[in-house]
Amino acid sequence: MTGIIGAFAGALGFACMYNLSGRNLWLAAFNGMMGQIVYVLTKAADWNEFAAMATASLTVTLLAELLARIFCSPVTAYLVCALIPLVPGKGIFETIRCWILDYADAGGWARITFLQGAGIAAGCLIAAGVARTLAGYRKQKKEAAS
Image (cartoon, rainbow, N blue to C red; front, side):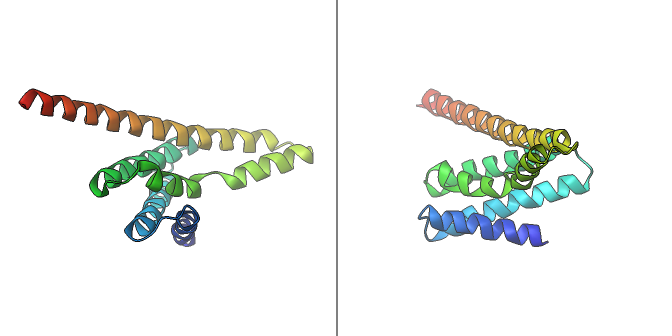
């Protein structure tokens, strides 16, 4: 529960830093919280790091695309702030710490961190591709009707 509240607060902080205001501020924070909820639920269902992070990233990106179209604002306003809580900061820190101190588990931390980062990238790419395809289809349908 604290991770979910922390994700909301972290996304809210980055939204403030990026000068979002009004409803965009709260929607960006809500989007960050939704990503963390999806990640926690998928990890509780015993999914691996890549799948959990890809699903959370996919959710955040699709929600950002939807909010941007509903409220006529840029996707990045919602997306960047929402992806920040998903960044595997602990994994990056532990990988470098174990590597510097020459611990044997540096490779394990590096693998987990790489899978999480790849999951974030894969989720964003899939969701952006789906959104662009649907937007193109919708535009084609609109042109054909007129």
